[in-house]
Image 1 (tube, one colour):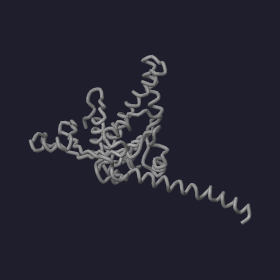
Image 2 (cartoon, rainbow, N blue to C red):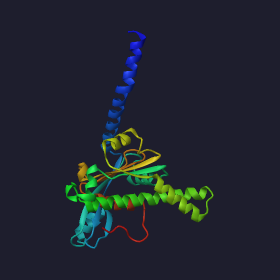
Image 3 (cartoon, helix red, strand yellow):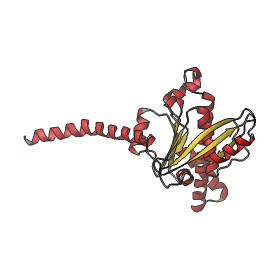
Image 4 (cartoon, rainbow, N blue to C red):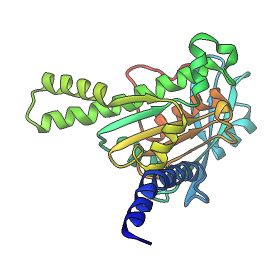
Length: 257
């Protein structure tokens, strides 16, 4: 084989084969994130949604005792949720580490592109638009609040006064926040680690439109949080559970449906 032919083959490999390999590797990486295998530890919880619009989070044992005593308000909805740990062996520590770390950017992956139907043609969406929109709004607001606090502290460390640090934090949070849908390219970005890493937090919503099979919350790698719910109403309840597990609180009460 002469040198020119060898060079030509190398060029073809770099132009054609390498990108295909990268795409396959990244797509496989995304699927592996959603199916990470056996967790190091897991914990069961029950989220109660009462007819009055209040959420309560209980351990599985607390829920059983409450059911046995007849203490639940009539008409309450129960959501059984499993929180899995793949990082530290503690589900609560995984969530705090993932959500409260300082990142450069964060992306909320709102779900399948069909979620856009909620804006114009809700009947075409394979789920409940009301609860999917509420879930996206709640999780985005929660993470934005944490981001703002982190960048406020950074502003103070940079020597800003209180008012300037607050404005800096607000501006930085706005600039570093991105929304995305679970398109092929978004899956490649996540699978390759371009987003969902120590510098770029990714929150992925998996519901009925994305063929969710159970109610669970897990962090398969640093910088990635997956919230999976068999219904969009379950997704909404799981965000409330996350807020409780990391000790997050709102001014007033935003956990009403």
